[in-house]
Image 1 (cartoon, rainbow, N blue to C red):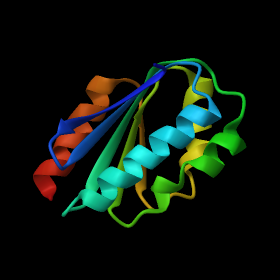
Image 2 (cartoon, rainbow, N blue to C red):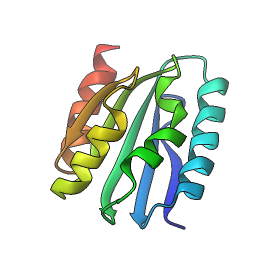
Image 3 (spheres, one colour):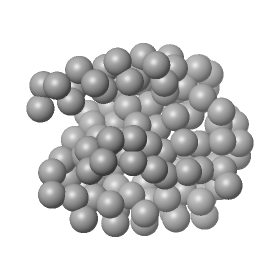
Image 4 (cartoon, one colour):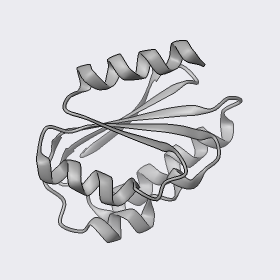
Length: 122
């Protein structure tokens, strides 16, 4: 499966790990699952996207159109870990109008450091 959605920290941090080619159908399915988690949550959530093993996307605007979770008021922060410049650019294009704060990091370790600081401050 090109994506996996799990709790990194129960009811606080969702981890969306992307691998290989991420299709529109998979993005729509992940979107539905994330929206379900956001609706079930009693507190604001943080989404960590691990895109370090993701292939370069070619359909930025199409992916953006199916990622409606980014406008949910329960999503407060999106942390993206990507080491490829084009993948980082794609994530910035996809999430630049998001209601949630976007943080782009070079790897998962850097994202976790920033994310943990955010958790301490909330």
